[in-house]
Length: 95
Image (tube, rainbow, N blue to C red; front, side):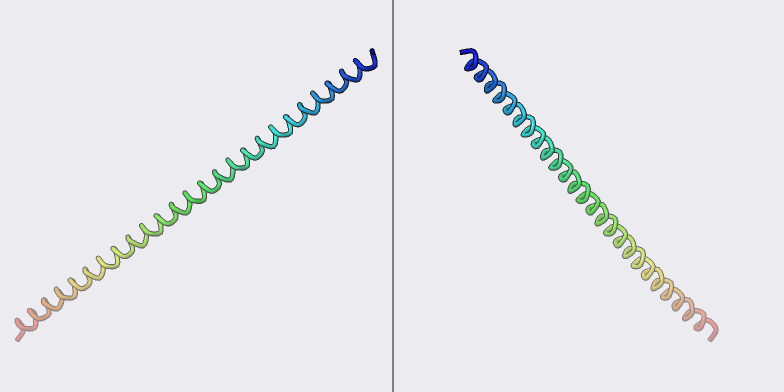
């Protein structure tokens, strides 16, 4: 009778230890998976933000360069027309 009680107690203790070990392993694996998913999501978000910022900066720079070039062309054309008009007036006055 004493041997049976000892065997039952040992089996219960073994089952409890196994359940605790399995529970700890499952919790650790879940925590690791959750942390990895969070890190991957953060990296993806950072990459997306960096790409968006770079694209916006490139677009702004291109627009500024185009505007500056157009303004320079307009200024040069206006200056050329003014110079031509002045030259024509000077030539007419000299004659």
